[in-house]
Image 1: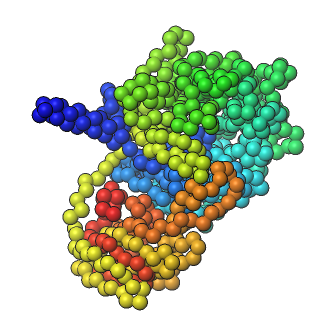
Image 2 (image 1 turned 90 degrees about the vertical axis):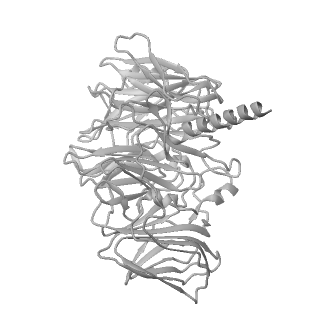
Image 3 (image 1 turned 90 degrees about the horizontal axis):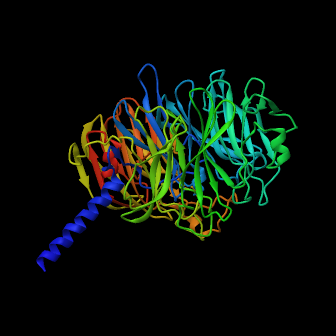
Length: 631
């Protein structure tokens, strides 16, 4: 019996360690390691770049930015600062439509500040955006702004081109559910942008039994051309869904086929009309990429070293049960389509919806002969979607296939390759269960995936005792009876509070410290507010989430349901090197430059609720330490 029990404990220990290896970042196979960016996050694959790397020539910036949205409607981004070997996670926007189509996308401005775009899924005529106050540093995001449009928005994809560095070219699905483009001014002194050309529908698709919705992926040559690969419609709508490619010349506004033949002029009333017919193929043979009689879809578009387009595409059978991955490239005189692998069927757990959702692919931007794909593999936990690397040989020989992840407990899907990183294959992807692209009463689980990467993620040493000057459990706080606490004066500090507020009357001032006041504005959408004298720094983010969507019908109806207020949360305030940062539940909410603060007395009060835990340190915590504080 002892032997049996001992063997059982050994097996249990091994199973636990194996699970940890596949979710927390230990070695999985060979040199491919898996690290965690976020335990809650997802994205669609038509809004890009969802991850971006930027480093400047003078060596002051070397960072990677990865954006995602979770099932509570929280839009977030992680910044990996390779120069200073640190990682930060930023709260871009709380209480948003909980839909994975709404992931943020990134753009580096000419002054090296980072601009972040996001929007709701098809049901609101505007974009939202935030711009970092400091070059290369999204922990310093400015306030949220809106860019109004006349049409609904989805999938923002921004570009800045060297022939016109004074403008942003923004592509999205907009006018009539079609590919759309507009030219924006650069952010002004108040970070405002405006549309000074467009928005214009780029093409018009004439086919689509269930509604015409061409799906487009974009790429640029960085100079004066924006390429778009697109479909006739959604592959669910039509069993024969073709793929096309055009490009736009920003000088002439001409839309051209791959050979440079002009198809139309963007902005004219006469649009280039597309359909999947023999007549169209005969008239525009160089605009058609794939006319196979299947449900074709696009996963990515990039340009090779000769500026020839390369695509990752999928062909789906009529019954939607079998998906095949392909590498497609322009050779200079024809489209070459190479079969990579069968990819099974839809990857997710809901059998009655979105049967055209493959595990997903991404192109190696450094070497477009390489595709990283998610395919089902039989392993320790059954048939799980694992990541594989497919290499297309130049001589037309056999495809080289290499499995990257092994024996994962959950599906690895929707990979994205980050261009510019020196790693040989820097990838980010989703891992976990997936039920729907939106949270609703039909499928309240939504998309409970994590974001994983094989890129090294710096972590700090954690010591929650070092620098601790005061720890108390003040308990119940009455608005009319503030509590004053004294600490030894310090120029750098961390204040950490675990709070519970009375949901009916609890909002108000929470604490005073170092000549400042921090509180929660009252109202239907209360927001954190930091006050310095007469200056108020009001957060972009509501102290609440979008869990109410779990009770609503599935769909995109343009409604803004009232936030579910957060009555218990962790507030952390740090100060060091003239930067004051506030954290809500471990995420950076606000970052404000302030000179020569000194912490001494702290006053708790002005709200109705309780403080379960209060800690004061004479040093500024890193975000890893902030997240390690018990809640």
